[in-house]
Length: 108
Image 1 (cartoon, rainbow, N blue to C red):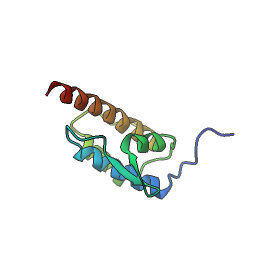
Image 2 (tube, rainbow, N blue to C red):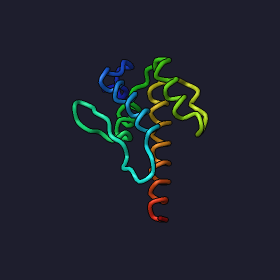
Image 3 (cartoon, helix red, strand yellow):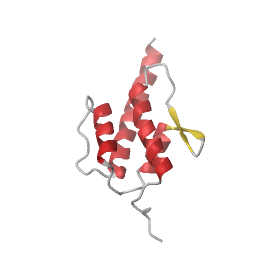
Image 4 (cartoon, rainbow, N blue to C red):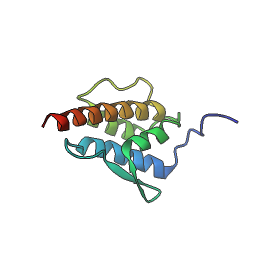
């Protein structure tokens, strides 16, 4: 059995990833990790990234630029524009932000 899924990301997962990028952008301290809809269920944005990271197909330019705009202040985007790299990149940023917000909530 082949470990990688086909490179074509299902539309519903692609839409959820687009939403996860926006939700990450709008996420502020004292808020729980944002959720977006996937299969009509609220799903944590880190879970969306985990699912998308199993796909190695190229990300459309519009989605890549959306990710780039939202994360431009943090660190350099991966060189390859695959779903896998973009999702792992956003997943790392989510973890960093979650840790930061947890620390902030303990200080106040």
